[in-house]
Length: 74
Image (cartoon, rainbow, N blue to C red; front, side):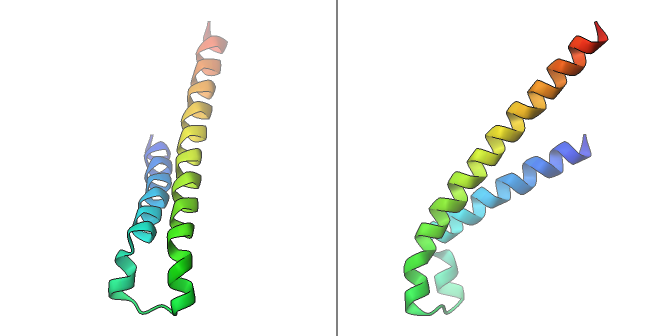
């Protein structure tokens, strides 16, 4: 059960990191070169999409694994 919680937490942190990149919160605390500041929102969108994709695939694979495990017991 602990590994499931850790997996969901790490995948959610990827989405949160993407949101931080999109909103530009890091730009106020860290100084990035001007060409890198333009890439941050694009990286944020990629992180958000990738994190959501990983959350959905992990959830569906976990559900499939649990259903197969239940069917094997019957």
